[in-house]
Image: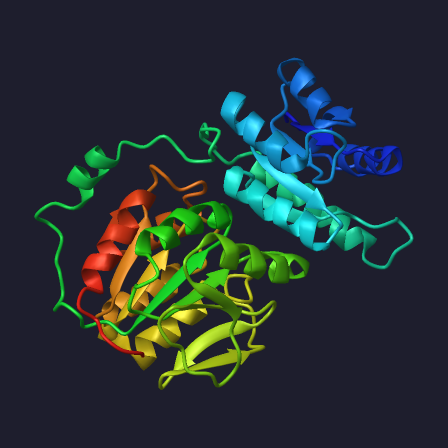
Length: 358
């Protein structure tokens, strides 16, 4: 079986050797090259021909964010950000790297004598192996994909679309996983600050990076982004993000946060959110399922559609990973599958004339 070739970009000699040992010990992987700087990585890229890149963030010279932009512009390849730091500057760079096209972020494994070593090492290797299969697309240097918007609109906004009564909706739920940060920015900015519905968000992300993700998303979109608290009432102008390792639900107009069993191996789970929307507000709900690996969200989106809610999945033409939206489409859970750039205009149409809070 052909092994997955990994390019390691890590400035610490000790950590670089440590990562080489971990990766070469996994039968699925082999180290194609291990370099100290982003400049070196770009120099050896074609010769090493990696299937996936393990990218540190704080590097001498060009940082991990800029390196990601360059690679995605010149040699599109799945990039996994590997970072141990949760300092604000590093978290900002990490999130910008995700926006620029990196497909995942994982914690850097700790020393082999540490209690979490086996878990973190295995998770890193599994992420590298899985993400190497992601079909990435070339990014412009501003981090945006090439997409013919006018063509996409013609294909997806035709006569077949069925519109509900204007202003009928009260809440929007969004679920994303791999590739989510990169998808959320244009979607949320496309909605604009006057979007009249509260937004509930499940984004699968490593717990230690959640606070940084909230801060980053708050700074790059027109909404106030907060971690959801049990018992609060959602209002327009805010995004309520599921807490780390907690499900997010809505019940009788209030948010509920709990430690229920994982669903689709996820907690928080998009299926749990969508199911609660179906049972709480049914036809007055809109659900959007974005890029992500696996099937989380699909069963919940189906229940939401059966309850009369409007359901949208990201189209395969723009999804970094079509797993979750693809699973929902196969189940018949989707009212429409739309390219990313068309989702916000559709949501604005659905929410038109909506007034007041939830």
